[in-house]
Length: 58
Image (cartoon, rainbow, N blue to C red; front, side):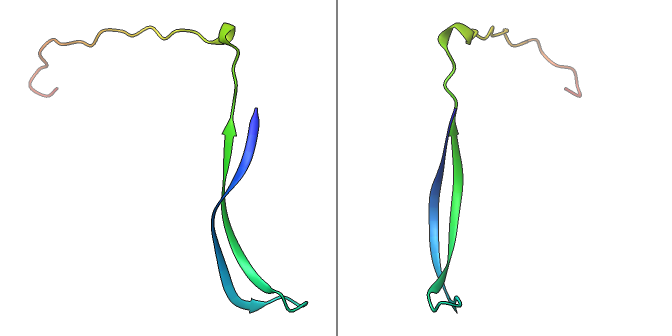
């Protein structure tokens, strides 16, 4: 499993910290990736749809 934090935006405010540096707002989004071994992956069984006509109320 991997996790990464991606920055989506940076905004500068009109305020300053106690040391005189400007304050910024950073928007971010976590991105996770999971790698699964092929042996653990199962094929999905697709069931056919019921195409029979429905009643008056579905």
